[in-house]
Image 1 (tube, protein in one colour):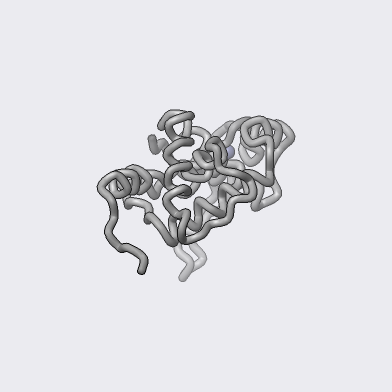
Image 2 (cartoon, rainbow, N blue to C red):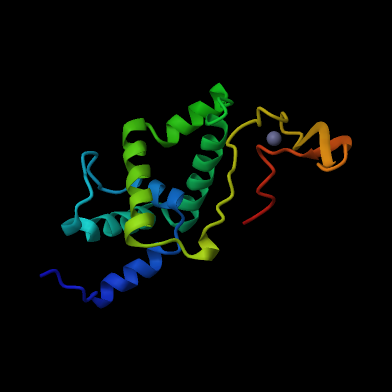
Length: 172
Ligand SMILES: [Zn+2]
């Protein structure tokens, strides 16, 4: 029956993958030799881990993270139907095949759920917008009325950090 022993090199690989957020894994898989038609099977779980590592080695750790941050930024705007032509163009240059990116994101999610969880320190990936922010026009702040206390009617008008491009703060 299936061996449950984990080979030493396999656990070392898992230790590296653990330091990658889901988005970073998706970026790595996109850049790897993973076939577009790949489907996760129990017998080939180690192949998925190997492709994630291959992609990170190809891109480098910093570039993997940078692209993942842009991917997160694109997704954040895309969900609100707020991407601009500029932002969409840069996204498409980075990920020319939407189908492959979908596949990479699905398998990255599967790897988080079923294979190797994300270490707590790797969970906070800043979302970065690659282009002019459509919400604040790069002023980094938005004017609004902010509820201070929902119990009373206490609210204040003023500038706040832009939710689209600044809410992740200056995280590295
Ligand atoms: Zn903004």
